Length: 220
Ligand code: B16
Ligand code: MG
Picture 1: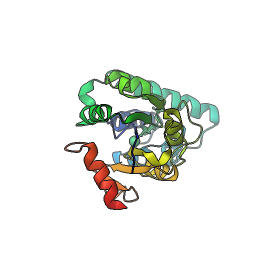
Picture 2: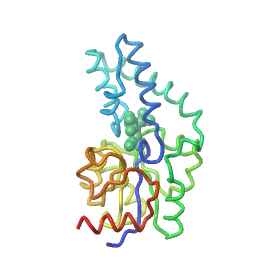
Picture 3: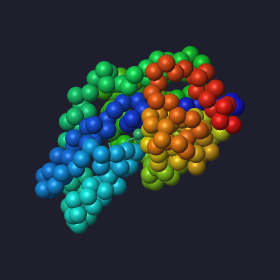
């Protein structure tokens, strides 16, 4: 094993923006006359904006034309932007900056692989933008996770072959995408939901790069 790069998902791995997506989608659902629960929000993790809207509309049993859908997605994003514009570095998930610093010190390359079209703004708000050599986000992809495109583009941008990359992901579809790209997948979160990852860590707390490579070797 010769790990040369780490590719990070954003929402759920670096920051918890899921709560802001939920607030904005719920506001939209309420404006359409129905409610949307936190449990239902789980279905939206790692899913693109328009695919998320389709899920919300099916929950509310609404059928709308394409123009209206575009308007609703824009409205949701405007509300979401209100929330993330107020984000600060306090909202970075525990121990993430320490882990990124360790990778830098070890000359492991760092990329982002996110479905979000707001990834750069989010990283700016929490002061982490400079860590990422390559950012592949929803503005650069044409296919959503579980398609491997986002991670393939990340590895390509870095010039590193897939088998030398680790992906960190909190969403089941993201883990599938990483594995389809031929990369190592570390699930971040619940081992039950991410059982198809090579290994799962609850968070980056008390985790260093040596732990991660040890976990990967144990799975082989
Ligand atoms: P936006 P990730 C994803 O981020 C979120 O998990 C998902 O809930 C959201 O719908 C998607 O980004 C698109 O976000 O509306 O900002 O373009 O987990 O892939 O970093
Ligand atoms: Mg995520």
